[in-house]
Length: 489
Image 1 (cartoon, rainbow, N blue to C red):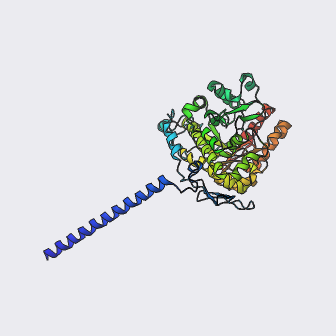
Image 2 (tube, rainbow, N blue to C red):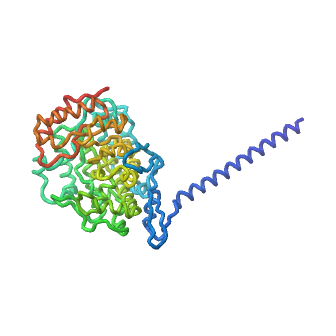
C-alpha cells in the first residue's frame, strides 16, 4: 500500500514539473515573437525610400507597376477610429489612450533635466488652499503652479466650482498699451527669447483683466525655428520660411527638439511665471497640420493649395512630416508641463480648411498622437481650431478634455455635437468688442445663457484678441462673466 502511495506521489510530481517546463517554453516563444514584432515593424513596399521608416505605423502605401502605375496610400489609423468615406457622416470615434510613445520621444524625454518633477495629478488634490494651490503633505508631490481646485482647472474637468472662469486667446499683445511700451524692436521671436520680457508680457493681461489663467507668451512656430528649419516671423505678415518644405530631403531639417538645449528661454519663462502667478499657467503648441501648413506654404495662406497638394499626391511624405511635427510638439508640451504649466492648449488654427473626411485621414492620427503622449501628465488638454464646426466630434475624439469652439457655432449646438462629457471653451464673437462695452457684455450674457450653467465651460473669445480692440471692453466682459455667470452643481 505504501509503495502505491509513493508511486502516485512521484507521478504527480513529474506531471507538475512537465507542465511547468511546457509553460516556461511557451512564455519564451511568446516573448521572442513580441520582440521580433516590435523591432521589425510592418513590411515596406519600397525599401529604397527612407520615408517608409518614418511612417511605420502611420501609413501603408501600395505601389503598382513601374510604368505609369498609380500609388494608393491609406493611413493606418488607430483601431478605435474608422476612416470617413463621406463628409455626410462624422463618427465620434473612441480615443485609444493606450498608444505608446515613439522611442525617439521616450529618449528625448529621458534626456531632459527636469527642473520641476513631473506629477501624476489626481482629479482632486487632497489638500489645497482657497486658490486651489496644493499645500501641506501633498505639496511635495505636485509641481509649484498646479491649481487643482482652481475654477479654471475644475471647469476643464467638468467639476463643480464657484464661478465661470475666463481668459482670452492672444490676451497678451498689441491691444495693451503697456505691451507697446515695453515690446521694443525686433520680431516676436526676439521677444520670446528674452525670458524677463516674456514673463512681463504674459503677466500684463492677468493684472489688467483679472482673467483666471495666464497663457505663455510664445508662438506655435518657436520649436520649428529652434531646430533650425529656417523660419522667421515677419511683422505684419506672420511666419515665413526661406525654403519651404517640398521634398523628402527636407525631413532632415526637422531634427528632434531638445527643449533644454533648443528652447531654454521658454522653460525659464515658464519657471518665472510659475513663481509669480497665483493662478494657472497655460502652455501650448501648434498641432501638426497647422505647423505643417506654414512650413509647406512658406507664409500664411488662404487656400493651403501646396499643403493639400502634398497631402493628396504624396501621402507618405505628408505623414512623415506630420509624425515629426507631432514628436516636436510632444517634446515642447512635455517640457512646459514639467516646468509647471497647469494646462495646455493644442492650436490647430487652420484645420477648418479641411472636410471631415480629409481631417480624419490626414490629421486625426497625428493630433491624437500628441494628446495621447501627454495624457498621463494629468493636466487638462484644450484643443482649438477656427471654422471647425463640422469637425467638433473629431476634434473632441482626438483626446481633448476641453474643445474650443469658435463663434460660428452656438454653444448649445456645439454641446449637442460633442456631448456632455467634454468641457467647452468659448465662444464670444471677437468683433462684438468693437461695438462697445454695452453691446459686447450683452453678447457675453448670451453665451452664458446658451451654456445654461454647465460646469464644463471656460469663457473665451471665439478666436484671439485683435490689436485694435479696446482693453477696457474686455475688462467689462470679465466682470460680467465673473459676476453673472452661473455654474450648476
